Length: 210
Image 1 (cartoon, rainbow, N blue to C red):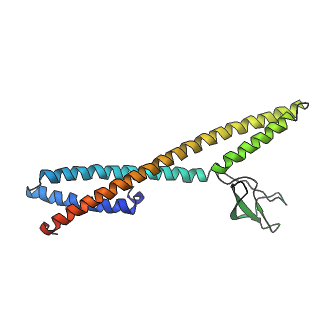
Image 2 (cartoon, rainbow, N blue to C red; image 1 turned 120 degrees about the vertical axis):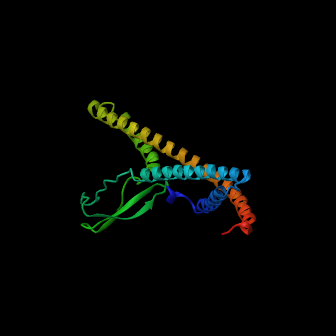
Image 3 (cartoon, helix red, strand yellow; image 1 turned 120 degrees about the horizontal axis):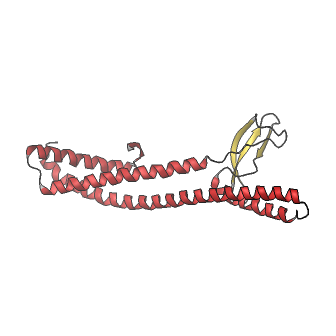
């Protein structure tokens, strides 16, 4: 967990460690004051908060990284229809702001942008457009019952996938927003506590053997 803490959090932990060691020495000498005991207790509580928040922050970021990778392109060259010699070259953004992967087919020596987004956030509006197109197609197939039934089945399957994706993204984005708000509050708290600890450290240092 320690590798997940920020530089500011790490600096506060170092200050807390200083006071903890000094408290242990004073306790061994039998000169630990009530004030120092209370300070140590406050430091312990803050340490727990720092590591707990760092763990939560890392979990949220890991979840977002996982979500970024859930979309698989299954891209194929538009010329030869094959995928074995494709190489991803870059990411393109279309007029709607959706990001899609660009590939080069080393067989046909062409570059192309794949026809769907490469991330779940852009996939949501993409699927919404696809659903609307399917609805239009279904409406136009009134006289062709078999084709209409197959199109409706595909539409229902896509609608379920869209709702599942929308729910997952909403949950992840809400959690990320919560984490960012907690980050701001934690940064404010650490700033104030760090100032206090540094003042206390300066006051103690002339009397410290270290």
